[in-house]
Image (cartoon, rainbow, N blue to C red; front, side, top):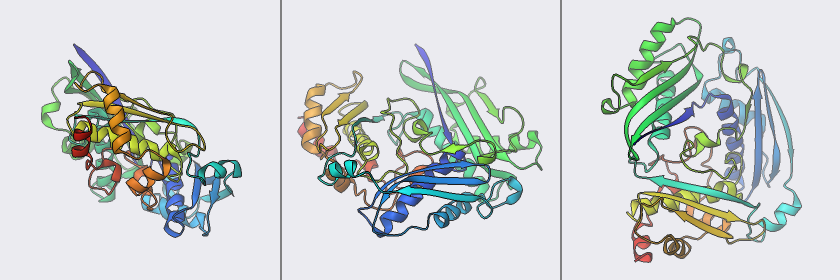
Length: 378
């Protein structure tokens, strides 16, 4: 039986991703000087203007406009001819302290809000991630790389990708379609850009054995992508939650990650759920695993732990659930300690997905619980 599944990703210059990175850059600036700072930071980007708002409680001072401009420069918004640049754009801030009603629950070690979070892993790729989202991420990372290395000097920071994979009996068989949207200057012909992107991006990333004569490839579908970034679309923090996770392949609790310190279970429990699911798949307990953790504000332990292996495990899910509670600390404080989440590591998570990025220092991608999990499930 044939089925198809598509996932998308975006570059760090996409307006929504710009806002995610601003939010996490502010978080990192706080954590650098105050590891216990509380941050809930949102950003909006539009033509000529960045607005940063939220609730921050900290003992340090952060010069937010300076943080924003440094980030925009690093992304590549440094040319006024593109319509948006780090020096001339306005930066407005509207910051207040965390609500005492929320702080009252967090200060005692409880969750900062109610909610449910999902983590997922499967055996489709070496990173134990679904193939469509991993290929989409790799394509836009490569698109950014050739821009930064000036291999294609006409490229600008914005960009998107989308990959549709054909599955046969639940296993990836081939790529059905690839879509690339590459932001560019005026001085390039469409046919030249398409040839360059095919050769330097798609052919560089995608294995030949996944592509055949029927694979459809679209590069800048309208022909031109000269107007991009915040000039063309307003960006908002937290609007790419599917790009951030599993590309729609797994369920999502609805909470965004960026701009939230690790006391917020939207973020920390999602990381722990991925950590658990990945170790279960790596241990061979299941080839597909989805974990759900749910919390109540002010309560430390999750109110429920749910496991779904989609029929790929011989171990009863109730037994796996008990093993999870035995092996992993699931309180907000325990998650933070286990995954070392008080470090200022978040800006680099805010583009190209939070999961499947091995050897980048993200503790939730470790598979160091394999042996103890095997023992716990017998």
